[in-house]
Length: 242
Ligand SMILES: Nc1ncnc2c1ncn2[C@@H]1O[C@H](COP(=O)(O)OP(=O)(O)OP(=O)(O)O)[C@@H](O)[C@H]1O
Ligand SMILES: [Mg+2]
Image (cartoon, rainbow, N blue to C red; front, side, top):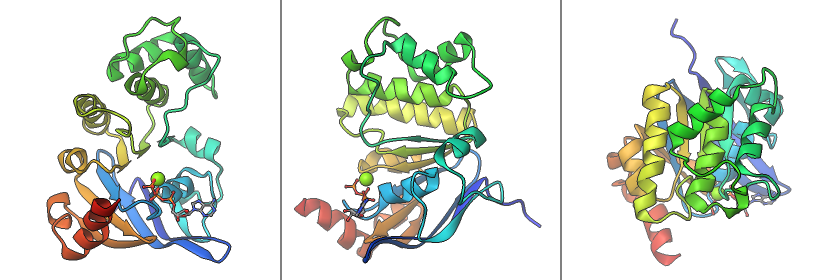
């Protein structure tokens, strides 16, 4: 028997009242995988991450970590298991300095992490600002670096990244590319990546899943999938009209 994937879901569905926003979504990742999740605005990508991270319960389907059904586990318990997540907007605590954010992250749950763990994570993401800097004074890239470092310091096994390059200029996207590459290739994390920048996805993702109106309409290698007529119709034409 083959081992179960590190992280997978089967038949996920979500309705808000009468409005169905996800249906029949199944996907799986193994250590070191980078799985891209793409689709036009409103396709259900963030809702999928809400369910995978435990912020929202699904209406149907299950989420598994190492073969264990974790559908009923809340966000913080999934975080303890090693499922980490970032959000579309890099919101940082308003009143804390960079050092204080790191301290809060180190002490978010037991075992508390050491200052060395935080320094290691800051180095890996290339965050080189003075620790006394107010977190809100950071630009978008450094905010994303700070939030990513707070996740990486705990060495999670699964990273759910919701548009980590949003709001960045092209030159800055390379920094995110390098961090995610390091997380997958050197640290062996499984990365699920929602991203509108297809060049970043094509460079990083081994596979992509295309969502349209809450359903998976295509999946496979990025260069093949992006070429499929129905993907072009759902995604690129929607983007062109956005
Ligand atoms: N709490 C909610 N109540 C009702 N509808 C919701 C709720 N959250 C999301 N939706 C709807 O579900 C659909 C999917 O939204 P979602 O944010 O998951 O899309 P997305 O693919 O992440 O889009 P984007 O690319 O713009 O980030 C949208 O039509 C949205 O309006
Ligand atoms: Mg979204």
